[in-house]
Length: 351
Image (cartoon, rainbow, N blue to C red; front, top):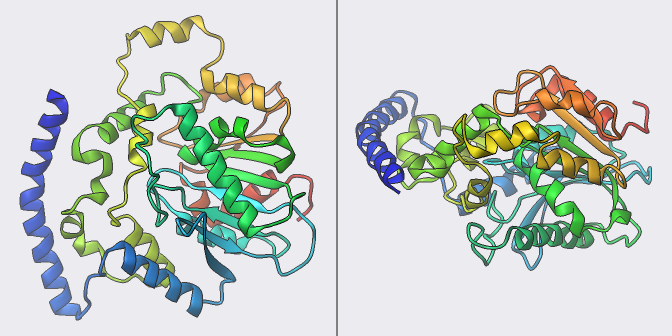
């Protein structure tokens, strides 16, 4: 508690002059260029999103499901193929529009859906507290959201889906998979998933910043739009504007769930000794269990600064298909990797 209070006070002290400097830079920039900062709010984002979908020849559509509480970005197939639809589950701090370019790059033989998880993006917050509820309850809840949303968008009772989780979305889906019928899963691709190594120091250090004080959602505070307003001018494309706006929408409820998993761990903690005594980490045990009934692809970036991939070597002789791509944590933003990601997601097809 003392650490959290100290960080909160320090952040307030640092942010005050930063607010003034940012406001001055923004005013000067708008005076010189005649550009105005983007109005950052959830309602404005939805309005800009609708405009982007309506005016851009991108094939994307927007659908609200689960009683209009969950938003899904869709790209429907225009060529009949009977291929399973691809379902993308986004990571921490992102939303469906962070994957829009990847969705548009996929061949027209696929239906592609990206769900804004409740508590993230522009979906409504869950009606329960993610920080205090049972973890199994939250996993079951998200599994129900996945399947309810898909049943409304793709009402084929015999449909299977190729699920693709990124970062925290991969971790969440892996733990939710036990609440989903195996008959509905064609494959499971987990990209840049945390937790492969129990003692991933970088990840846990960043986690400490997430968990304590304002830093857990630095872009989601009331003063964020002022502190960063110099960066809130419209970008070259509508999509870039949307992606930039999303970071400032004050809807960071999902961070509470992230905080359940990420905590600062000292190098000589009890968990460290427990790790030495164990052959596999809990997440690897879960991976091995799922791989007995489901085709699992594990994808990591060779330059990922967040997720430690050193444990992948022990999985090479298992049922899990391991892949390492030349990239960082945000592989879905690297256009040169799109075709490689697709070939991994559905390696039964030729492109």
